[in-house]
Amino acid sequence: MWEWDLATGRIHWHRGLAALFGYKATSTDAKWRESRIHPEDREEAQRSLQRATIENPGGVWSHSHRFRHADGRYAQVTERAYVVSDAAGPRRVVGTITAHLGRSVQRAPRRPVAASA
Image (cartoon, rainbow, N blue to C red; front, side, top):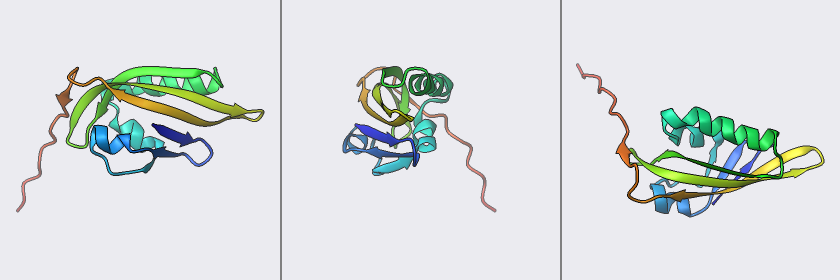
């Protein structure tokens, strides 16, 4: 489970982040989360969540994409979230992330290592 405070930009992750993906962080920002979404899925995932918060406040958002493990593998996940709004607009997003174990898992491309002199 995660909770994104739209005013501060902080995302608070509950225990599942470490258990499912190996990350120790309990509080991140939106850029951290977005950087863990597979590059081929990232733009659509961002656009989809933005539509949910701007065009459908108070609605439920759901999106499937690949999310990177701490060890570099990607897992197919589904994120579901509810946008919490008040009279002034969206305030926070409360969501879950479910990994589909054994499906569409791949390693992140390796970056070349610079030779040392």
